[in-house]
Image (cartoon, rainbow over all chains, first blue to last red; front, side, top):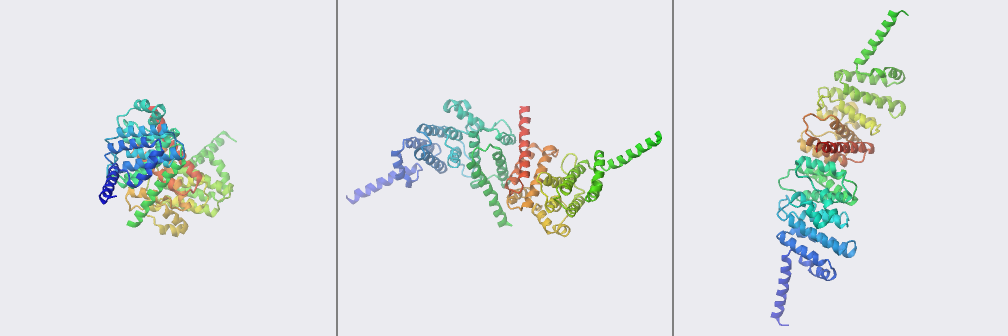
Length: 271
Length: 271
């Protein structure tokens, strides 16, 4: 092979990798995942959803990371555990597409204003990864859990697209925005003890995500006292939820402990 | 016996009963307790403490009721269970005298502005009645728990009068008033996990009393949202305390549940 031909081939390869990298996918996993594409019938669905997400969020790195983590758990559930069917994973991908479209103009409150879809995907991820939940309806409920509360989505729309069970779950975890903020927060505590198991699992994963997020990346305009209050309030909600998932409960206890313990050292250092 | 003599005797008896009733003691228990006075060597000490309290609080009915409940538990512990000695009960009475004197110009925040001493006595009562604690040092720690925080009392004064163990307990449950309110409240949550068993028991009984008090008799200027936040905060403190007393923990869980459940019915009625 001539030197020029070799250089051309190397250049082409780099171009291929770069165009792949442009979609935010870590280059290093390219080869491993090529294998999966061949092996797994869910790979194409996941890739398509990933591509839509990539475009909708303008290549947001956090969103893509959350999606990749979630996709990995889905693949494990499908391929290794055989605990989920192709149809279920396709419906979950529809859930991601739907939620991403609905939340497309919204962001989280953190400094970087991460696209909002990072949250429902993260909640669904915690539900599966930490809580080991494998019920597709609950996972989809997690993906859609903020659509009615925070966008123009209606329960009817969800029922038509995803069925009665999922719209019921979303209804259970949707706050009534016509109420004042204080009353809404109170109502979450009050109503926690009356949730179904699936709704309780979604709420646990939701709180776990938010508590971690506040720990690692709090909104810049939140005072320490406000974060304290969020932690205290979340604990009250969680303590009153039915015991729907020990692993999620334990993980929440751990992050809450970690939050307060971190403050001891901060206090010890400054005093 | 002549009719007039009989009437005179009846009148004298009524006068006696009334003068007794003036000290706030329920007339009905007069005869039963005459018996106890003869039988029990702690009765006189309790009566003297009761009298001081009666004078210091200007005959406050709530204080006297709290004292009578507490005295009853002490008598059961002494006479029936034999779980406390004369010396211990005498020291507990000294604790009541000391705290009542220190808090004499303070009131609770409720509508009636109940004398403050109603609180430490109530906390000591919950500790014994609900928590079944019989360690005199912990009971006295409960009686003195707010003296340093809310009055001019020093730890040295407590150590000189009640010993090192009790002053240590009081130190563990005393907030640093030089800190801002938010920081103090945060510090209670933070430091909860590092409390000794005795201090944790006092804190549990303290929170139980306050939660019940807020439930039954909230300060008139507290909004519902503020009471909510107190409940949420108290739960965070309690959840992080070492598991020092299951019965107190259970009673706290019960009142917290009761608080939120009551609001469901309030919400259901008005909506």
